[in-house]
Image (cartoon, rainbow, N blue to C red; front, side):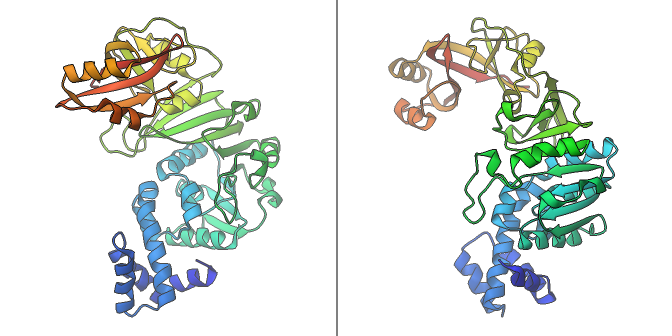
Length: 403
């Protein structure tokens, strides 16, 4: 995709090609290309339309129905914020009184569009000309061009005094190769610029990778980890006036009818510097959501569950009673075994277990290899937890506790 192809897709002929591509995407790509050629779509336009149709199909998981009208790149889609996460962030900014926002490194505009939908005037800055043009096209397609405008340029040169708040999502992939960048100083914009933003703007939010080193979190900032339906998707630093607590784990859902509800949130907060008490294995195991673990809020969750760790370095919590809730999955422990493949295989065969889910923390074993080695047969099911108890490799045989 280049700027000329994007311009072609935004014509009436391009819109017709996109509609035709949407009807044939998702199957055999050669058959799809043949179908567009048979419909009289020029080869170059057909290729661009099919690429967009496939990216839009994939983007539905992140953006929902709005993906059908967006212009996308593969790299931009991969780094773009999920719609439910962006909407919640925008709502929090609006509730804090933010009316104007700079989105530095706005990418395809996922966060900026959510903020605009919340009534915030957004000024986007994007260094890549094609991505900037796509973001502007996405704003127009969403009917938000009056609230979200994009300039192609250097994010570090934007005059942040023009706005009340700043959002920054530094690029964490190398331009051209798409490889992940693990050194924050190699981000674009670089990490030192990002950390200085909070000093220049009283209300700053920075999207960061979920695996961020806690040592990099600026003093006084709130660090938030976000999961969606149990999948840890991102972290964000809320700086200056926006910081409310030291650490926050936010659990969202994209599913209707869940305890969280579509787009609603459960939030666990705390200092993030406490250690949970250690005790014996008890009847029920609670497996914390990854956002709780990464936010270092396992001790706070242990307080809620009246639970303890069995190993100080393993984030499984054990309790005498089941306490189903949003922050941890609950399993009932039926057997505690020092790990032995032979003994475990014999136990499962005795009980007719033919299906297992395998969870692990603190174990070097590979679940796929273990499943093959067990050579299961039977109609019953079980959950196996591979872990360490007081430093010793251990397997817990469990069954789920229903909410």
